[in-house]
Image (cartoon, rainbow, N blue to C red; front, top):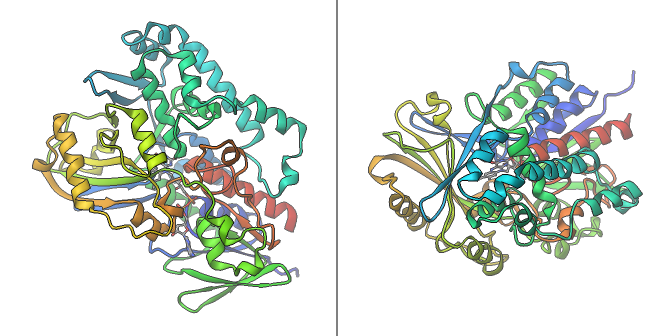
Length: 493
Ligand SMILES: Cc1cc2nc3c(=O)[nH]c(=O)nc-3n(C[C@H](O)[C@H](O)[C@H](O)COP(=O)(O)OP(=O)(O)OC[C@H]3O[C@@H](n4cnc5c(N)ncnc54)[C@H](O)[C@@H]3O)c2cc1C
């Protein structure tokens, strides 16, 4: 009888789980090695007393991407997690006190816009058509495939697709074609942060996020988004994936341009026919593989990428409920300056935009004794090679202070809080400079030419997750796990 092929996955984030489920169901005996005590990577539940929070993805789009992972192995996704569509999903509050609700109902949205910007209301249908086109283009040519070498770019349809994806226009310029009011532009420009970038440099290609949120819809998972990670874990275990938490990979052993085994901090060795690195490839590939064994990815190259945006997050458990929407954004006074501060100067904005997710507005059982406020301020990625001393307490107080000015007296109702900042993310997930989405998409090169899904030096080492193709964000990394697994199955069968 033919011996079953062994696959080893380094990291149990969404991309690792997605790859593991597909590989196991397609005949590979698969092991996941995860350094932390929980599975799901950046997506996991945080509990403070009776208050439950989702860390990581609070906004879920493309629900079918998550469902199809489970459907592919013959299971019913509804048995693992269920999505609720939030039609009127985001309340955008501007510095002048006015607010604009974002809704995936077109008529409602046109009505909302008409109070701000008659031009925008008139152009909204055209905007939706245009962003749908951008989505369909990427969906057809980029999302469902791996990029393993330069040869993969040598295709006429792909070149045409790249040129049609508006690479030369910025997201801000794109939005200005449809909207005139600065507040409306500001609200749509925030989509650049979903890919960890600035709207003044990221290409208009990412207008496609507008299709996901305003056309397709924003979703929340019943019981919290961490149910997705939990559902993936349950399916993986049911199929027979060997999931090992608290198992940190510290070294890879190579022979004849192949990775033969990996060694963990617990002094275990795991041998495999094929390996998938889900941990951030920018930090872990150089860490695990000796530089002489990866001439195509030198230490110098690994630090040359522009990191995506990071975040300062406060999870605040309160004893009372506040007048907030599920997703609510308080914009600062000068958003352009905030992006310049983050990306040019590497500092926090002086009047930062504050995003709050209060999932208890949709599912009160998540925090029966008050609200579960997930508060996020955009943060610059960590600077390379410097000492990152930062006063987290002062920053937390500064955020409460600003929210008090917006009539949200959180401090007086605070039971408990937990802070996560870029430094903590760099330490807990080994995220490149604490970035949320791996590489930023501020440059065309970094948008279309992310690090490949496969090592150029070790033929049986593949990459899945936010730093590689197709990009960061929960649906994209799940696709990346599926794409890599499909590629491995095709090649190794
Ligand atoms: C605060 C925040 C808000 C976000 N908001 C959204 C949102 O609203 N919507 C959205 O779609 N996305 C959002 N994201 C992004 C999303 O969370 C990520 O893109 C996605 O979860 C990344 O998944 P991944 O599998 O690529 O990586 P990770 O989740 O980082 O998983 C990699 C795993 O590898 C492990 N690992 C690393 N090195 C090793 C090693 N040497 N040995 C063993 N294990 C190792 C890590 O511990 C980690 O568990 C957000 C992220 C953050 C942090």
